[in-house]
Amino acid sequence: MVTSDANIPLAAVRSGIRRSADPRAVRTRERIASAVQRLLHGGREVTVRAIVAEAAVSRATFYTHFADLEELALWLQSSTFEVLAEAERSEADAGDPAEAMLVSQQRLVEHYAQNRALYAAVFTIPVARGMQSAVAQTMARRIRDHIVDRADLPAALDAHLSALYIANAATGVIVAWVLDEVEADADAIASHLFELMPRWMHRDRHSHDGPSVAREPERIQP
Image (cartoon, rainbow, N blue to C red):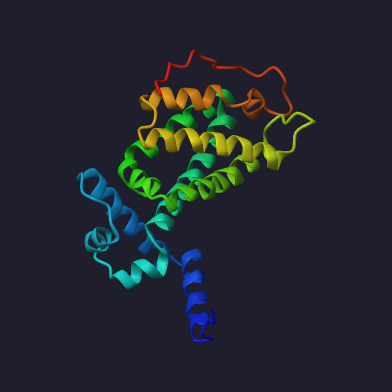
């Protein structure tokens, strides 16, 4: 397939805008995100048509910032991972790292609960189930940062591989829950994500006897 040279600059411009930290681009993305939240809270269907109408932007503006609904969902998740990672870091510094990790998992699940309709719509699309890998990759980058900066990683383990393992496992659980493939409430999911987390993830590398907040997870029905 031959690509027209005229399309190359346009694609480059769109790619730059999607990554841009320019205040105008940020405000537009936030405006679109706010529209999604209003649609979800109102129990309305989340489609590109509904989003642009609610956000009062053109379809061209939407597609300048996001290639499709799946990319918007991935951006929302990525932004959430960043916020949660920063909050977890601050709270771990101020108190119990294990408790901070548990609270972070609770907030993560709460995000998916609040945006369940959007993510269910995206994950249900057969092609979009491949987005689970993209979400895991995005989550893994944050987990690897945590491992390198803070965790007491065992000498036999690699930070990148460990992050991929944890992220893919967590994402698998979350996607199954969002799609109602398991019966569990948000607290049970958060508890399992925390209890399945290796203890060294919330043990500072300079201390081998940090506190633990281990608790019995609720049983989950398939």
